[in-house]
Amino acid sequence: MQVFGAILAQLLHLLFMLAAAPLVLGVTRWLKARLMGRRGASPLQPLRDLDKLLRKRPVLAENASVVSEAAPYVAFAACLLAIALVPSFARGMAFAPFADLILLAGLLALSRIALALAGMDVGTAFGGLGAAREMSFAAFAEPALLLCVLNFVILAGSTNLDLIAGTFRDGALGLRVSLGLAAVAMLAVAVAENARIPVDNPATHLELTMVHEAMLLESSGRHLALWEYGAALRLTLWLSLVAAIFVPFGTAPAGSGPLAWAVGLLAWLLKMGALCLALAWFESAIAKMRVFRVPEFLGAALLLALLGAALLFVSTGLA
Image 1 (cartoon, helix red, strand yellow):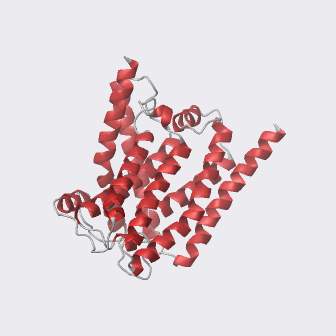
Image 2 (cartoon, helix red, strand yellow):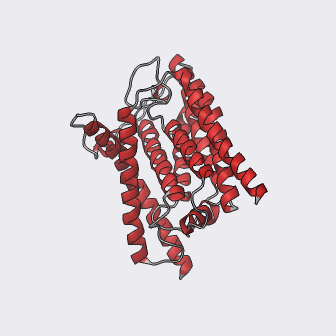
Image 3 (spheres, helix red, strand yellow):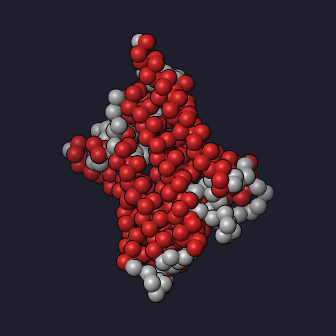
């Protein structure tokens, strides 16, 4: 019976995530517009855009290889598998034993590599420029993420996301400076991974400042829909990851029933709404930085995560 409940919770989690991803993107855009004094598009606009794009056949360049055809599906599959590992309303789902943060980082890296290869495949200047910038940012973002994972491993004794969330939920660790440093570093990496301001501006069309969008200039139709849906899934994944680690309260424990799931779903919706509002406020209050300043931004995140791990090593050694 417990196995059936875990499978059912996993299926519901996937359905909720797939349905919520476009809404998370739409709500964030709408909140940002309202904070800046504009009316803004409907929160359902990403769903309408996806529906329109899915009805269109993709158009490929004459010199496009199989990479341009396969990359959107590989990237979307990687994002879908990664989002299945991040708990939302309940812990102890069917994929919980595989919810390893190192595996999660690898899946996100696979999605990034597929996007960079698609940008370089046709050989356009903007695609290559965006791919080069994307991979240079990844050289700072991925080590920062792994150092954040190191902080969690020292505190929880495991890289499993379910165990980490359960340990933090019990509150036995108390307030730690190292955990706060890791939280700031992870938030900076999340902003960079999702091409949000100040690292990038997902709403701009300025060719000289584009990063992620430059790699999508040759995409259209169903391929562009997969890229856009994957970006929405990635944003939802990072917000859910931050909520699961740093705000684990309200999540239904493993082996619980539908009533606890309903409470957990309500808590997850409230946390996601608060994070969307915080992201919209942050983006409306800050300007986009120059491309050459992004390594400094991610380097600061790397140093914060490293400082947190060093403090944990010192405190553990003294204990």
